[in-house]
Length: 97
Image (cartoon, rainbow, N blue to C red; front, side):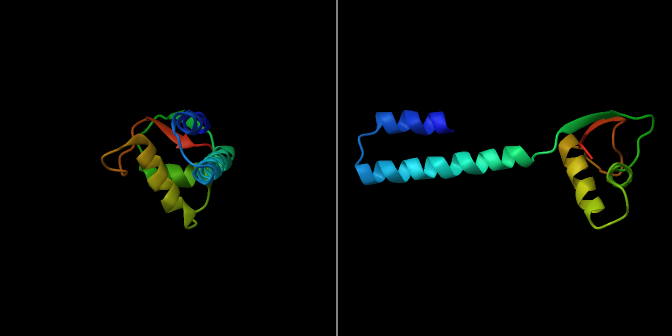
């Protein structure tokens, strides 16, 4: 992102105040992306012996039946683009516990 902004700044003939505004936007975007990357969990690949629902795997991977289990099940299903989260493939991706 920073490189793209820098290229545009070099190619544009804009005032100092506009240039400063673009640089400030660049800095905010770079900082935001850096923060997001620093908090990402790695993805693990699972190869299991039986097809079970995403809710089962969320409970098994992340523990307990708390309110986050349903959100984690949705995340697992979304990562794997399944048609029905009730039927997960035997090889799938999940966020590291």
